[in-house]
Length: 309
Image 1 (tube, rainbow, N blue to C red):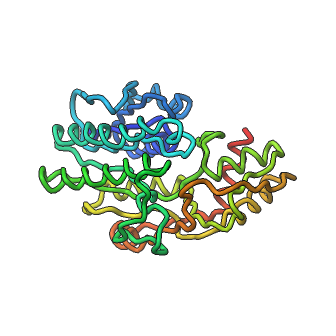
Image 2: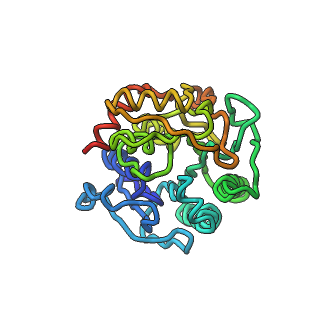
């Protein structure tokens, strides 16, 4: 029998790419999404696939899936600053209630559980680059706390299920990821810059643009998640591209590859905006033999035409 994978948030950016990857690998895929940030267009190519099933569902409520489920990938989340600042309570619910419901399903089905966590668990880090052993520097009552703490709670709950119920759990700490299927008004820096550049509008840079980020192309990220899903590890693993760029460097690359004449518009730094963000992926290299293969320059060359189209 084909193995069955449930993906919460499967109509979102990363989730929909995972649906495609798993279908190509021969899995049966069950996709759940309530479209608070997901998009039906992202999964439209799979709707008629014989091994694909889609249900509209808010995972903050009980999840009931008939039949066999071998893997539960809890991808559902409001991961963009635009979204979690607009919907802080829903963000906390999907990280807490949604994670609890997804773990409950995995326990019932005796399935492997994989949590999509985030580099935001490290907050505005005091350690650079960030290793999985770093506990983080997070303002739990700040405006970003709803997202950061929802993921930190989700990780704690996942490990509790692993220890108490012997559930086979995985935790992917995902760093900045970009590529086709991102929303133009996503609120994250890569789609923001591309959207502005293609319309010859000013590129919005916060502060002086000296804050650093690491950008992982979606194909690399999906491969890392797939390998982690099949791995033996139960502890958190960083997934991201260790290449480090300032926001200004990114802005100049977007202008170069888009051919835009946009200028740079500087704005004040948002509250609790991280100054540095770069993953240490030594653990991922060791246990799943994974490292990104696509450079930022190549990734932008692939992403900008998608936004143009």
